Amino acid sequence: MRKSMLIVLAVVATFIVAGCGGSSLTGKTWQLTAITEQVPAFQGVVPEADQARYTIQFNSDGTYNALADCNNMNGKYTTTGTGGMTIEPGAMTMMACPEGSMADMYVAALLSTESYAIASGALTLTTTAGGTLVFK
Image (cartoon, rainbow, N blue to C red; front, side, top):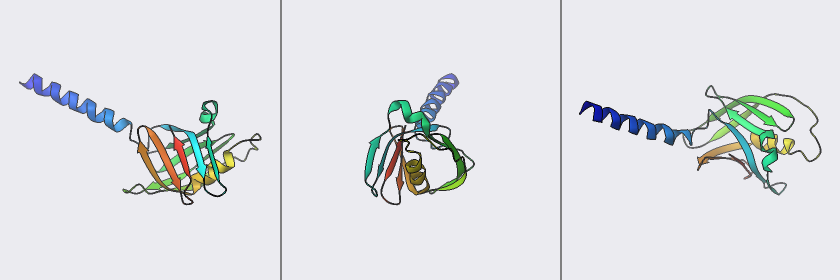
């Protein structure tokens, strides 16, 4: 009886841990897959080869680290229980990225984030102007 109970508890724990892994904001480096803006109007998919150049990692201590093409940035973020989020700027390198870079648009969108949602392994940040950043 005791052995059966331990097996059941182990199976339940495995399902709980597996279920939590796909919905956690922290502990993962998120790669940008798509970006939209309302003003100026823009909608684009980030080519798979470029996704690793636009990332963000949210740390459990309320800080983040991001890569915006050829620049690194960090700062603080806060979340609410209802999906609200603010991202505050911190230090950022100021390299001139190559022509066609989405670095400036990406940074501006990050810093105007007002909410977030995680579904099906994807993170969506929504900006105050109604734009979105979608990460995998």
